[in-house]
Length: 266
Image 1 (cartoon, rainbow, N blue to C red):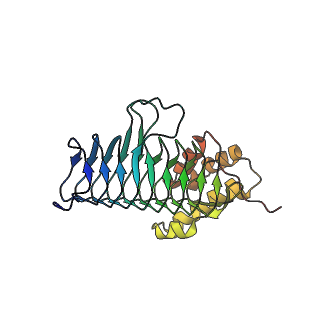
Image 2 (image 1 turned 120 degrees about the vertical axis):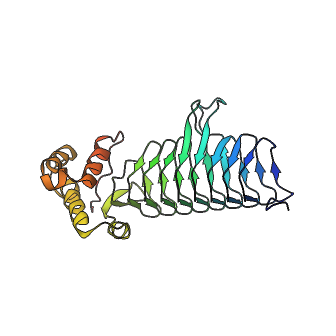
Image 3 (image 1 turned 135 degrees about the horizontal axis):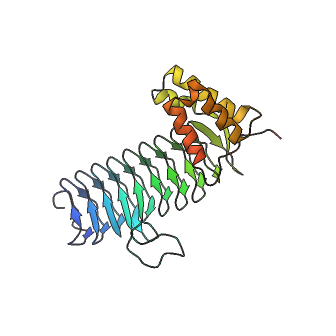
């Protein structure tokens, strides 16, 4: 052991290792990797590709970061994995680099990725996000701040998970989940209501929660279709002029896959 780095770790001489980094035995860190200060890396970890990991991260045993994308279109081009600060990456997590030349898989700050979760190529995972055990994000998925994705959730490629959204366990997400919503469904994830607990914990005021509820009711509990609901929300001054509701509107208007439908009893 030297300065917190095991003598049994294999570290390429060209890798850049920050201050106060600890690295466990049998971990492999390859040539084009950069590790930020105070990051702790456990045993049997593999960090490869053009990978940049920030400060104060914890990477547990058997995680694989920056490996080849699982994409037939990848032809060996240079692409990246960028990971921010204060992330906890638990056992056997996999994070793959981008597919197209110079493209990136990007992870923000203050996230927790629990055991066996997977972040596919070209994903963008922002800040303060929880992926519970065995979550799988397909390629090009975007997850916005403060989302919570429960265990064994499968997210189809190109889907987006909005800020403060919550996905229930064992769900299959094939369309975008709007901000502030709660979704679940093993066949197809559908909207089950607002993420009320997440909004309270996130410090949203009662007035803000009430506005979000009004927008939700117009979107999912009225007879309007999505376009009509959005127009109604925009024209309601208390809603259309509110920054939180504007984010909801923008998210839906920018959806390419469409948004998840509401749950209906059969």
